[in-house]
Image (tube, rainbow, N blue to C red; front, side):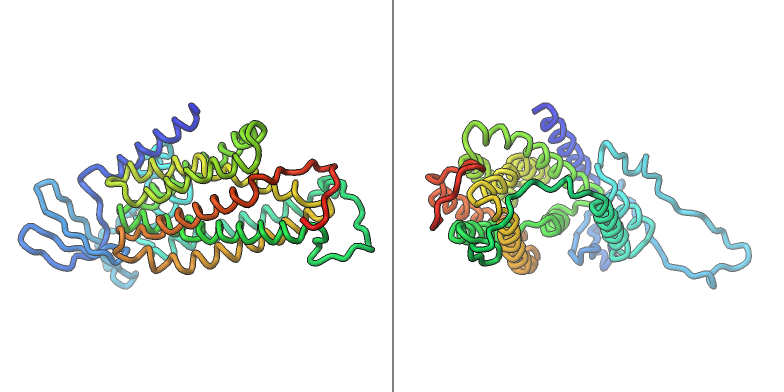
Length: 354
């Protein structure tokens, strides 16, 4: 709990630091009306700034080598990460990299492309490491009975796998409305949060989600898999709905982090439950089928969420409400269908017609 509390405090301080006046706005000046400056930001939003004695305005003008003449003064512009974006204050490397490149005048699409390419390279490296693993990492699974009729690798557990796949697809459909990219866009549009702060927010969220997995094992051992899944997932979805209703950036971050602190406890328990209600020789097939169902559901949700985050309803926060509501329906349906169906022991023979 001390680690979670420290992370929450760190992220709230980062949010507060970014929200303190005077604000920093990057964009194109469109008009000056008295003491009000009208600026179109990088996100194509319009900001009206009241000028004061403390207001500072800096401009950038693109030049080429042909513009440099004799006796022209040439300076060098650099960003000192340790001073401008201190890691304890703003978090993770991707957000810092994007922020630094934006401040160096790099186009947004090129700044973000750097991080995406880096992500792809890391993925290839992980794939290479996986290729080095030996067969010793595989569990001992009984040889499949060739006389048993199978459909997609499933024989006795077809019904339960179909039901779980449908429910998991519904849950992933709701989650598709609040994938990390959608949440990042919303924070940027709603609160004008910079990439460096977004990196800190998601660092804290993912760290809390990872730590929650350790807690989930203890809860499942005491209360059971289904109770742990629903008991932690349901309140996390209520918190998800509340995010766009928060009046300040700090409260939005706090509610989001609180949600992530418990929302991922259902992941290891869900996987364990799926493996426990099918026969040992069906586990790989069951994992593949339920995984495909979740991928399809998430893709559909994300496609619908993109236009909603740019809408004016709830300040673009409608995806949070839809996601939380759909996920609550999933929790209640899962509880109603499987609360009386305990996970079987791995060595217990399965009953036909499941």
